[in-house]
Image (cartoon, rainbow, N blue to C red; front, side):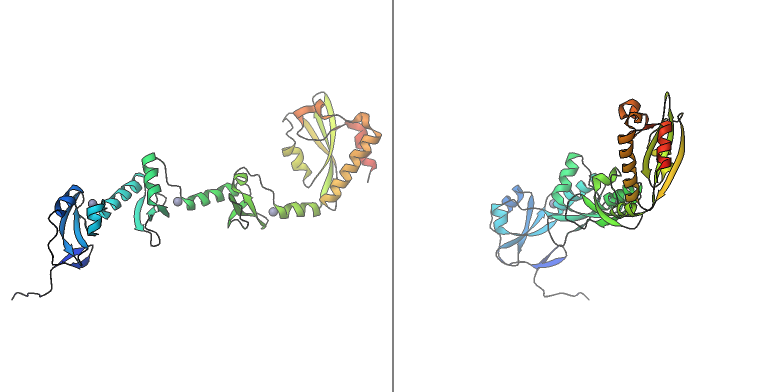
Length: 303
Ligand SMILES: [Zn+2]
Ligand SMILES: [Zn+2]
Ligand SMILES: [Zn+2]
């Protein structure tokens, strides 16, 4: 048995049913639609609307008749195709339209992250041969850079300065550092700097046998052996020795004592001081060195 319905005639557009409007289209409309890349199917809903079908992709759309007459109707099927193709050219997959703005869509990048981007920017990037930058990957990279220097990326900066992030030092202290500085390890931990001033430190006396210029060098450091071996940039063949270290209760105290020693040297034994130009880059220090024997006696007699 055959079933007949008495529903009025309707057109399906994008899964929704639109009632055919029982009035013949103006005879000029089919030609107008044709010239603009569409077939006129029928009038729907009311006397202001019709259904067009795109020549290029076959997608049907409900369009206002004044748009058909006075403007270029857009095919959303073609627009979607164009955007998806642009995304694909960038190695991405357009997966969703943005709920908030019709100018934005969501794409899954090659790395697996999903980004929200303006369609226009994606199409421009594709046309210009550029890539889509992935924020998630960028943050991962910042974290990797920081780890080389004993820091971890903590998250957005607490302050409002652009180009900054909050990083956590190995000691547990977190602070804002510029991304650019961190990439070069150019960050000093506020907490450690403070602790350093309050932690025990040493005044040291090194013997450094530079060729033809044996000297002693006095200074302060929390780790004199490390300073001698790694920080002074002394050539491998040069014989060095730690003659003496004196433990002081804090970094501040060490700085104070070191300055007092240098002052005493300047006042009482100025002729023994070797100025920087004499040893040049052989020892990587801002200060001066003192020729051997008398300086040892000097520090030995001191506190
Ligand atoms: Zn189309
Ligand atoms: Zn990514
Ligand atoms: Zn620290």
